Amino acid sequence: MIVEFISVGTEILLGDIVNTNVQYLSQVCARLGLDVFHSSVVGDNHDRLMDALRLATSRSDCIILTGGLGSTDDDITKRVVIEFLGNETEESDYNRQVVNNWFADDKAKEDNRIVYTFPKGSTILENHVGTASGAWVPFEIDGHEGFIAILPGPPNEMQPMVDESLVPLLTEHSEGVTKSLVIRMGVIGEYQMNEVLKDEIAHSVNPTFAPYVKDDGALLRITAKSSNLMEADRMISSAMQIVKEKLGHYIVAMGEESRPEVLVRLLREKGEKIATAESLTAGLVAATIVDAAGASDVFEQSFVVYSDRAKHKILTVPKKKLKESTAVSETVCKAMLNGLYARTGAELCIATTGYAGPDGDDVGHVFIGIAYHGKNTVHEHHFHGSRGQIRNRVKNVAIDYAIMTLKRG
Image (tube, one colour):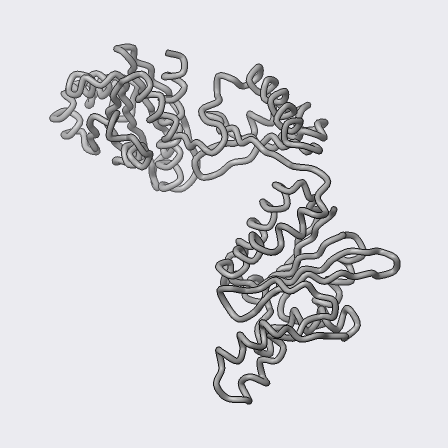
């Protein structure tokens, strides 16, 4: 079944609210093996919503509308759907009682009549949080049969309604399952992934390969559609072997496990400790690691050594090296690692130093040091972006290098 979303609300078009409903509904449909090819946003305008419904019902089997189910003048969704389907209506006793319980005077109850009025033939999707229930309505237009689902806009009302009432109805029309596996890549970006997996991304139909980037780094999503979960798992496993052969060295996490969670897990499995010495990241690396459950078992110490004086006093970085090589250098980064290990004895040590900007010719020039069991490695990078973006990127890449080091042993 092909599903299409129409989000109703001028406030979405103005950017006053973020449309998280489409993300949630997309995830639900993907889980049920339903295809989603189109999604649109329409303001609180009768004619434009009618046009959107005509187009959607001509190409999709199920149209899910969110928002505009209240009783005010700008809540047009149900009124337009009723008109679109021929103006025949019926009333819901459950929703009439809800309205009666909410309002005391007769005028308010009559003004909210639309709340308990639905297109004829509706299956009511009861709202146990607010007043406006949703509906599941069959349609037949020019020989094309399908369904229109109308849902409230507030996520705290929409999501429970979907889980309780809409998912069972959608499941009846699901012909299989869709399953995805998210693979988090360390150090490399979306472009590099695309270059290595160019043929798979361009030509694979099922499963598909999709690289993208989130705040914590690059990801690759493998998605398989099948008639059953076992076959979908087999398809993903086969695709995963291709990824491992081509990019195995860069894989730092898979599935729901985050990068910091992987790092903490690996250290706990090895019974080892970690310590950090941070200049430009100023504690970001440490804070991100300790966000992961179990960090107290492995996190030893952290030092923010922002100034040259702090690098010398706390980590014993020689003043001569700081003067001759400057704080942003491979030499000083190695000295920071040595001082950190001497001070903490942690098996895994991370050091960061660089220029975050916003001014200067060397903005984005950074060094990330990893020491593991006495072996030091310093990585030089040139990152782009704002001051905050550079610092965040350094933090992410430092954790990537740490995971990759632990996996190599």
